[in-house]
Image (cartoon, rainbow, N blue to C red; front, side, top):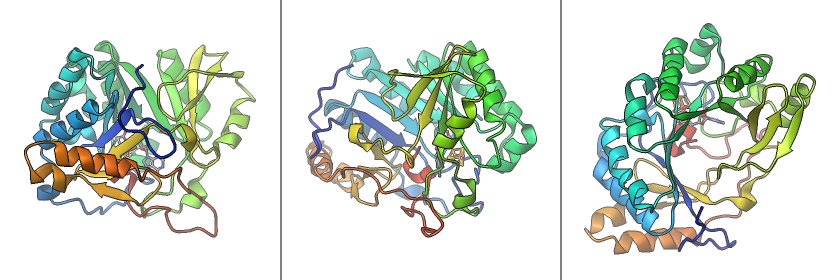
Length: 335
Ligand code: SAM
Ligand code: SF4
């Protein structure tokens, strides 16, 4: 992968990875992600698909090599396949190494084949449990069977699927070993994630928070885990699981600070650029995008924002720190 980028932050990190939240809406209401009665953005505030494409293209011209679409649920945005089709041209020219997405899987049955035709090679599917009732409880609105059919369709279309599960104390901690066996048995990598304090939700995060150091110790009672240098460009640290022959990733924003190798920035569906998932500082790219047809202003605004990329986040979850570190929900910035 090419690490050349004209976007270098004050700490010498080259920005080569862009995550774009294409919508703040979702057909689920996962309890750790959203409140049940979320207020969504008015449609007029959203960037159009054409604007999103222009924005992504400018980032690619400036050195982004990997692009991940997320949300909210990216596949519920109207005409999303049009955007994906447009962006896939950058794969054909070689300007982009990877176009991928993070999805809850609910719409995959419908879109898997088209995604594959657009050059998408792997996707992340978020799935916290294989128990239908628990799935309904954690997502509030989701139907497990539909997601499982989506995963089948994705694999049938030749997409590599990685399962992402948020580790939640008292919810799925006992089930995770079984999920690892299930995912690895189907040829899928799996990653476990710590809950992050983003946005007010209806539950107490202190009760849900399960440090992955603790989970790892528990997993080691039944699995042999060997650290490996495998990297996907994201923040996960991987181990090989001897008993299953599969790979397991740990994303530990709270127990292990991974910021030093951060190569990414995030844009929301309103064109707000966040230089760090865990900080409030942001830059508005919608105004420069709309101010002229050329990309000069936009490019300058991006450069200026990159000079403000912070060294890292300050997430904490403990009894004394009850408020979220940042007020926006994960569905705004995207996971
Ligand atoms: N809707 C898509 C999905 O669920 O995959 C994409 C967006 S979702 C916000 C991206 C990821 O963020 C999901 O894997 C989700 O489980 C995770 N997530 C949401 N809220 C979180 C939180 N507070 N802490 C940690 N992960 C969170
Ligand atoms: Fe929707 Fe994904 Fe948030 Fe769940 S985690 S509510 S699927 S955006």
